[in-house]
Image (cartoon, rainbow, N blue to C red; front, side):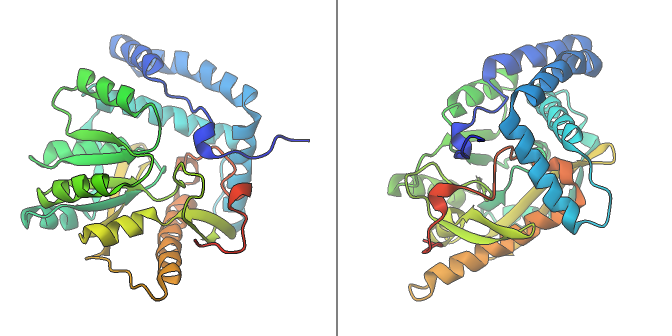
Length: 313
């Protein structure tokens, strides 16, 4: 029998700070091909030795294939795309990425928000390379980003960012649960014109996380409702952010989601589920467009601890 599915936070993903520094040094000294020469054998070993991730990738790609009219790559291509994203992250962190090649879509809505002196909430995903938003922060003087993360490795990543680029405007904030103190801190940052980035496609690390079961790639899946609750508390503009590598270049897409978000007490759960479903539909759109760019290597559709009749909760 196969091992039972686990919460994503229990799965140790590729990307520890020490190993990342070593890979970056190889790339910096020898370039992209020596980096690949080291990375791809490691990736091949990971593909062979991690059946959970391999099965999860295959399941996801089968769901995409059932809905897509275009050919869908296989598991190896999916992992290879993940490897290329790791490389691009290294180059970005070290200031070696060719930023002129990045294509922005919808950047004007972010610029307009910043020109009004307002910050906002950016709901992102594990699709493509989130660190591409650093390119925008580098091009727009004074644009600061705070990324909320749920992993214990956040302090190490933050220190590494500062070592590679002391002027980095990308801050990682460890958040296990959203406390009133954290909400106040984020409200202050947004009031100062900063943007807070939160993932919309991973449930929080909690005993009973608040989620909504909504359609995604042909089946119900659990999506967090925390981003929308946070947006209602902060009362700020809400945007969606998707990045991807497409046709040899990188793209960043910004979409306006809500000017502000208010949740009435009556019908609150239904409203949260509708917001999560709207986000899931946009994520599905991009997954069908570039299937190998979504990097959630765990069983996204079956989390036993969430299989309860009262979801969303």
